[in-house]
Length: 431
Image 1 (cartoon, helix red, strand yellow):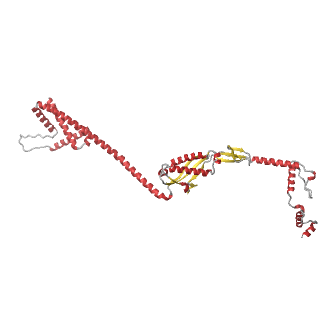
Image 2 (cartoon, helix red, strand yellow):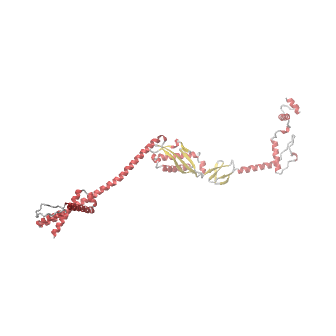
């Protein structure tokens, strides 16, 4: 096989000849019907073609002995001056591209942070900015106007609960399930990037720590009902204090309670307990309302009775004093003229009796057995007198007449009649 190949190409080569491989390829091409010079060009030929094209573009001419491609063993040598110009232009273009790679644009509401060999250098405002390209400097863009949200106790939906984060212990040793969201913004992008790792997870842990402290100092009913806004506000304040100590570079804008409830395992029992507590409060309120209605009325009645008793005591005392004084005066007059005084007292008593009673005049001397008594007129007269007396008493003392018992009223009327009779007797004595 090798002998026949040597005969065809007309060459005598040894097995150690370095041209063996080239000649073998030429022989293969000869067998395929191709010329020896039609193979893929080598790197030198490609470089020569590129140099010739650049020289032609920049107006350079090839050397007289280097024009065109030579088919023999002598190739074209590159023009060193043209190659230098080409390399310089290529280097300039590469340098311009490298310098242009340091340009970057910061959007409105964002802040650019420039790093020099990985260390913070300076911050850039919004707009077009430039830095030294890689590997000298790099940049990071931080959105400081965006309101970010981190969930505690759930992820994306309240149904996706995170029991390790949501279950908390209250001050009265009850377990409560709290799910809330924290909204925050960045106030220091440099601190946000370099002071802490995993910033969002750090903020979530700070929120969980803060609310556990607030809930641990509060009662369960306070957290469930009237104290939800207070718990959220205190949690926001405590979170901001911790974030400032950690230099996170974030400001908490709002803490929103999504769900506050007892654990699902005891939800039914807790609802029953809540209903029982509501019934107790309702009954207490009803009892308090009834007490507020009855107690003032009872106090008013007691005060009225005390005032009426005081008035009756004063009246009786003054009447007794007046009767005693009048008796002393009558006694003095009686000692002066006993007979006259006795007759006068008798006449006054009879006058008092006849003035308050209905009278019928009967002619006993006529000797008639038939006696006519006008009973209808007597009854009508008596009723009219009673009505007028009652009206007069009611007009004089409306409260005392209705409040005092009948026995006291009769006693008072009797004392008044006695006083009137004694006054009339004194008037007659003075005459």
